[in-house]
Length: 248
Image 1: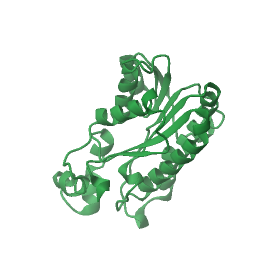
Image 2: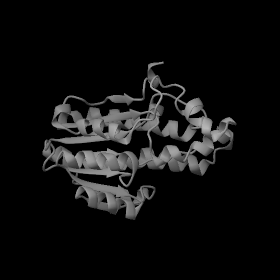
Image 3: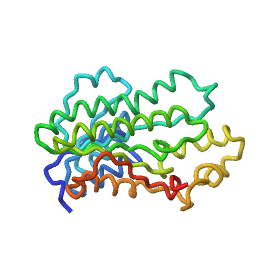
């Protein structure tokens, strides 16, 4: 498949997990991929694999993004982190950092990419949100708040970008088999007072009708379709891939 041949794509958090899977999927459709990540070695490895370009960037350094101009046709805002804790114990600086990484940085990248997309009359913005962009869970105040904010950013971008041939959508997976999920097992166990081996069944998958983790390649397949010409009339949407969680 080469329906994205000649198109350029930028993926944040592209060194591993969903981001790396998206890099492979978009490259397989013919896109020239830039793999952006704070992990220099990881970005270089994935970029080498897909014949793309690595970009080592700290998205928390928002001042460096304010005057950025991007010549990318496809922007995938994927970078994210998680932190578990009750609100009254949640460090304010940690809360702010998650908003910066998952709302302000995507805004600045969208802002930097739209002029090029508008000039050519074509663009695709895909924001990796979460079922937590639509639903809430206890002990995830910063993550849930940020993902709800990302949903709003995506919808406004869809309204403004539509007349210029630019679409903007969210992909909303449940728990995905990534290092981000693996790293929160211990924190979830501590917050809920259960053994780590019980977290998957009792916490992560309790709301899902399909009792397994989402695979990164499954998320990437939806992202690559949203970036394709076939999805030209799909914008302002939130596509759940949560095993039935949000059906409740």
